[in-house]
Length: 487
Picture: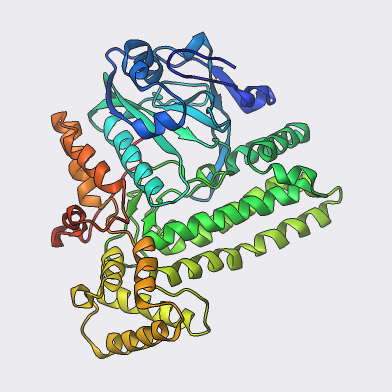
């Protein structure tokens, strides 16, 4: 353990794993670091001292100019199926500073993103541009406040140095906080090297860190697989319920903890369309909004393959156990998704007709190009005339069926509305609002727009007057939006 006046309290358990799973690494110092965004709430929960982190010693740690207490960083090794193609990878521009143990005894990875070249950079410069780091900060914080498991952002530091992409862009470093950075790809890396002892050490570590209840099970590695599957099913259902599109659901972006990670070409849908793709590189729509449940199931199958040597001494039986576990994903996901959709419609208990009510509404929304978030917001407050689907006989029939379903439950209309308010956000990080914030910061060094947006997103279920302006979407912003990985 280490302690200092900033409040860093590191216990780097990952370093006790086999050396094949990481590379000891120092960050590359930057010339003129400047703290441009800082997460006060998160710092406090981590047991960190805000004042100290704003001073030169704290800024040096957030910029990668020094590691607290003179320790060293780690670049983690992992592999990944990237758009279906398997590659051995690793932290090419990220560095694990340490694992912060909070005053409550919780453990979180503190990682710098954009901190320079590592052993896994494969020709890259190891740096990051300011715009993508601000995007990750804004959207990861929005996801947290929406109640969705996610990595979080402690700070963004501009480096005073440019990074070369298609043009010169201002550089930045993001400090990312995660339950861990263990990925499906981490297990693929260990399995791909063929060292069963390393794979077992990694699996035991994951169990100890995230699923300690599995340790005493008859088959702890099978419980690990099933536990990760269940958390990912719940996570992806939560994405679908708010219209979030990750954009790059490679196996190295699927976490063992069940957190959302790596906010590259991500965005939220405005118009409801399951085929929505924002990422410039996803030309085939592999990771489209409607495909996300299928893709995480595919990724989990790769996780299961990696664990096969640990599941049973006989390979045939091990494969059978893996297959049976993965086959449970669909029902697990649908259970979370239908439960969430019922809540969005004010329905407290499951009824046979619910599935038809939900699917009919989504079909109408797709046909009329209705805004996803605002449709449910309008349903919540009985302002159906504000929705794109308000006219037409089909919607009138649907509305009649829905209202009859509400009338049939024991809970009152007021209770139903409170349920809907708690599960239908008033605001999401609308794409045009995010772009406004990034443009102001990157082009004019103006962070007021980003901070105002972050303040609005901090309480998405408040349904306040101040949030109404952030719910509007200009016609010019309803289509054609493209995002980029920002590497």
